[in-house]
Length: 307
Image (cartoon, rainbow, N blue to C red):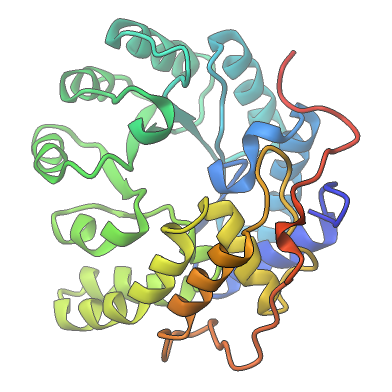
């Protein structure tokens, strides 16, 4: 975002290019970290178009977000498909807390409405409800549903689903990327990877070649950066605070109701950062954060997602 809360389109292009150039196979636009809940529908669709242009075939562009209204989610994903998205990531309907029958119907109807491959996003900490094991098994039978982004962290369930379906799993919890990969996950969709994508590329490659020692070393180097990004303020806020301090984005601004870190929160983030050593893309010797970040978030000119 710019300082006044509008999308910084040149900054978006630069950031997407940086992440792809440092090892990402794909980019999720309008994911949680992409502030999807406060973006307008036209902004979401333009992000797909910009992502496709910048990627230029080097990485897949997946549109995230969705809606807790099934009709709106279908509309968004159909328009995203026309805009050039390579895949869609559907989050469990949030706040209205549907039953498992409602979740099943929501995912099936959205998957029916597009020819794109679908990733289910299971994050009960944000949505209020999990996708249960039984529901995942039933959804796995849909020809378009190919993967799960797991932020639930139930590794026994992940193992059961991997044993009983052909679904791919992507770790959705930065601290658990290596454990997920070690039991058969395909990759990760992460927040800290916005700051340091290269080490995650190294972890995935090391696991794929059976080198657990190399993967563990990268995991351990990343641990304080993950803690800095994921534990003190929302990941969106911390990632922007850190990226701006590194000089890689023009502003740490977020849209309300998110706000920047208060001084004591910034101090905790920087205490973790002081422990980061040897992480490619995360050289903090000249770290210059925005000390006024706690001034608050921005109100954009046009309100966001509701129809």
